[in-house]
Image (tube, rainbow, N blue to C red; front, top):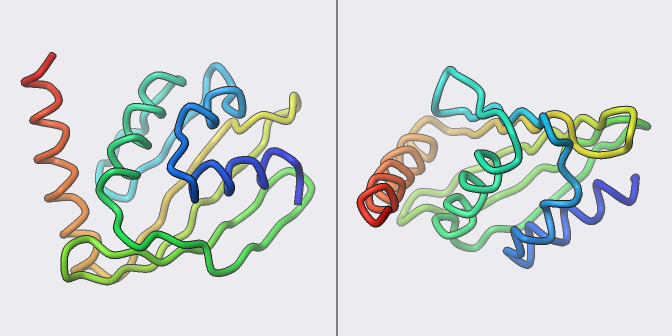
Length: 129
């Protein structure tokens, strides 16, 4: 596992989203399982990761699959009474920073619970702005 993957994993487990910032490429793309359009850029990615970290309960990584320029970090979490499983697929750019983060989640009931909780959280954040 590269240092970038390990640092991302450790930051996610600690819910320390500020520690993720230096790991991201300036033009990072985050592909969410909830929306069809990718989130582009560091600020959009960090915004979404902060809300995910606040929404997931009992978040833990359970396995890792790694290669020289990518890693798949398998996780389990809960949203309310819904258990879910997911994958954070990190692809590194030539500079060693995360160029693309693709998140996959199952089952549909867990994904639906996440989408509803995230929608409410993001809407509330937009109202505070």
